[in-house]
Length: 422
Image (cartoon, rainbow, N blue to C red; front, side, top):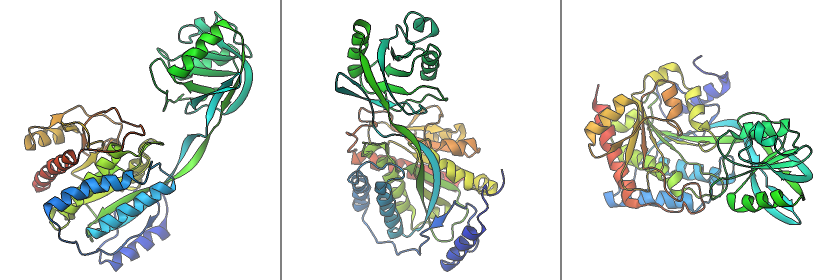
């Protein structure tokens, strides 16, 4: 990997000049695509411990009250402005690292029958399309032998989810002559977040079990025409990572981060205003200490769309910057469920367990913003309290302040021990 994956000499010079204004001795080793809002440090207001604890919960509620924080929307700009302001109040220099990526967007897809509309979700990767045709129920799960039992040529096929990939069902439907496909969830709720994983030739719509099962029964008994409307497209999304560090800290030993975006329709209290607020709390605790000069604090965007913020961060970093890190600590969903879990690199999880014997250690896996760092051989720790019923729903509105404080204290203990080891 080259030191910087993009040639942006002007941005680099501008960033260097701005750093000079705040007395930074050298240019930053990590160069974002475009860096804005580099600010002077502000004096840190003295605060009681109880005020700091309350501030963490207040940060969660402030983010939640903004609504769903979907990357690329005005709400995310508002959230990033809030975080910048809070980090500056705590004495930190802030930078905004911007990055672009393509995102699949469902603009409102449905299937209508006899004038009644059945809402569905366009599967990520489908082609858009409007089709009027008879609907035909396919038995079992949509293997080639299942399609051979019915005639779907020129029809919209409807089949249950399960056993084989969505893309296989779609390719089998297209090979049998179908002009569209509806996939019915095999359990309660919407089949949201599904992806085809490869290009298929027909529009594909996902339906909830509640709405799709009556359609399956009707298609088995009575031939009827339906209108399939898959209204989806790919858009370019602009994301904003918020990077905070004390003045002059160009080579940290730790990256402490978590994503501040949420999924559409969810205010994201636990996922992940909780992690965002804990990272901010850690920054406040460490701002007047020597340890604070060994860390960068990052609020990542684009996590829910595929870890885009953390990928942009590591891709813009020099090999020297990454090799100088002792670790990356990631906080995701830490405000619900009593017992805190920690996963990640075996050497760091063993260190964490020795420091905090009561934590639960789980296996290292991806799915959050530590993963791109691990892929670059940076040791990682993932702080996580597990799934809960409000995950990715409109009901993700609140968290337990006590759990936020416990997570913060556990992380502080680990950070202090980790940074004192040569």
